Image 1 (spheres, rainbow, N blue to C red):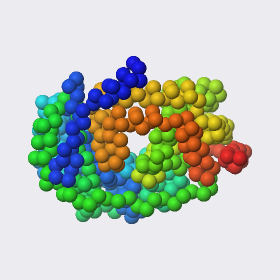
Image 2: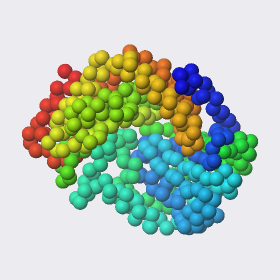
Image 3: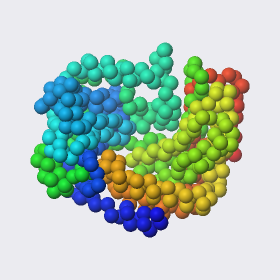
Image 4: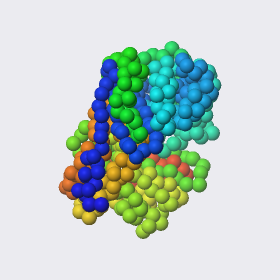
Amino acid sequence: MTRSAVASALAGLQLVEAAAAELPVLVIPRKASHRAVVTMLLRVGSRFESRADNGVSHFLEHMLYRGSASNPTAHDLALAFERLGGTLYAATQSDHGTLAISLPPENLEPACRLFADVVRSPRFSDIEIERDIVREEILEDLDDDGRQIDADNLVRALMYKGHPLGFTITGSLRQLASFDVPALERHHARHYTGTNAALCFSGAVDPDACVRLARELFSDMPKGPRVTVAPPPPPQDAPRLRLVENVSSQTDLRIAFRAVGDHDPREPAAEMLLRVLDDGMSTRLYERICDAKGLCYDVSALHESYEDDGVFDVAAECRHARAPEVLGEVLGLLADLAEHGPTEAELDKARDRDGWQMRALLDDAEGLAHLAAMGTIARIARTPAERHRELAAATRAEVRDAAAAIFRPQGMSVVAVGMADAAAQRAIKKALASFGR
């Protein structure tokens, strides 16, 4: 399919906008779908927390499963959704929370009533049982001595040094122990409001019926003020390194850089930089580290933007002795992109693949709903066509400039979790010191 045909397919998507009082309501009908999807995204997560209540958003998400006004127990609630052909999904990220259900379209109305009950009237019952469950989740990221060993958590803490963007999503065991029902009720009242949420229906749905249902069930949802984020994190002015000893078969390596936020004009170029670096096995990162050097089984990159900042990182697992070499190879690759940028052929391939991926999203009712709701609460692109236009417009020079702005030693943080002897530690420090010279 040509680029013009891809653009035409993306432009054909229908997005209906309405509101239930202060709650934005979006509907994306897809006639070919055999499922109906209801998704709500909210401005909630560790980014909106303090050191004292870090983890409360995640614990609240867990407690939503513990029953509602119409289904008083966790089992009652799960059974009610599953008898309608769906399973309630909930997740917490650093800057947003998600609630979603996918089910046969003929059961949309009763499922929406259950969904509204979960959002509006959680019971917060059996708190100690759920606290034990979350405790087990937190322990997955700790070693036998209670030390944090999750490389993603460690590198963000190193990058942001006490700022909420560096908090873990789950919080600590000590913080978890402090949460009670009044704390959950306060957090719910602050974040689960019309101004801080977006509701999206997609798939085999009728727009008029969805809007009527949303207004019936959510028009009296509290308005609430739009929650604001903490002040932006202070700039980083020097590279940072943390080596964490952990008995395992491999070293888990993270090479992270402070990047750009959602509304920075360089954000589309930064996303295209990611696609040049890591979007399939033929892109630079995999080809160099795995195919050419054989240093890792797998290696990946991530670009994550927030309201006012961002992270661009590379993740790799390798034999302990190879960690310095992997670090050096990755840094060399990033330095080359910062100096020369991608080739026009690489950028063309990235544009084409993005167009095809956005076209594939037209068949994914859940993905469409998430994109539209996320775009609404974050005030960014809401449709595949909008996002594809942003990315496809990024020029080679803009991607090179984004690489030069991001891949700087001043904004770099490196974490290695594994067993590094003295020689390996010296080699890792030498690679960091030579980067950017």
